[in-house]
Amino acid sequence: MDYRLGKLPARPDAIKHKFGSFFHSSELPVPTLVFGRPDLIKDWGMLANDRHSCCVFSGAFHETMLWRAWSGAPIPEFTDENVLSDYSAVTGYDPNEPSTDRGADMQRAASYRKKVGIVDATGQRHQVAAYVSLKAGDVDQLALAAFMFGAVGLGVEMPTSAMDQFEQNEPWDVVSGSRIEGGHYIPVISRNHAGNFLIVTWGRLHAVTPAFISKYMDEGVVYLSFEQLRGTGLSPRGFDKIALTKALNEV
Image (cartoon, rainbow, N blue to C red; front, side):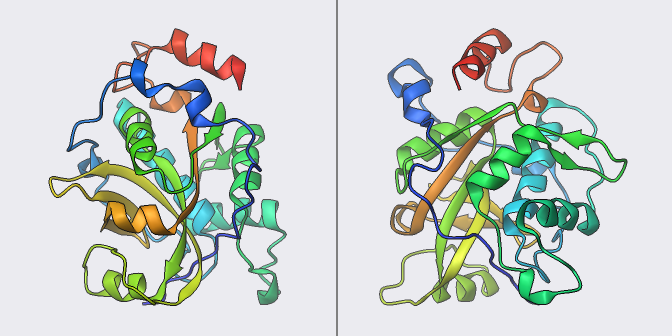
């Protein structure tokens, strides 16, 4: 099976609002060692990332699936065609011209998700309310964000060794001297008993060590989405709608 990358190089400070400026670890719950609900989705789907460099948008659809499942709402149907339509809208990708399949910028994709939203098979749009950036390589900040919001968009520089480790179903870990193949976008959705993060990529879950993230993470985005809220107005971590709205008004 083919595995495509597709995250364009990180642009430092392209997202001006920082997670650390709005959410202070001293005032928030300490993430448990094990967190997340990776079991909520039984079939993630490849969402065209085996044939196209659309990982930034495939990941966006995976994040939305999880937020909906986490809140107890029905999970929309997302198709390869849905992913590619949004990917095309942001990047100019033309299915009739393969040379235009060059990948996506994380900030521009996040802006599109806020202003327009990704589309499901019924034509409904799913928007995020706001987004803030994570500090590259900061594993503790990533853990806090994933613990609070269920899914965090991670941008990494992908070494050849990680592709091999994926094939062998081994956690992504640092291999000295491994060549960088390009950029990749992956949603981080949980952490397991071994202290490794679980991400969604190429249609399934995969484990990633903190050392890998510390070395290869070059950007990250935390999305604030009302789709993760339950009917009570609370997120699964108890982050209330009033506090969330206040944070959104500042971003």
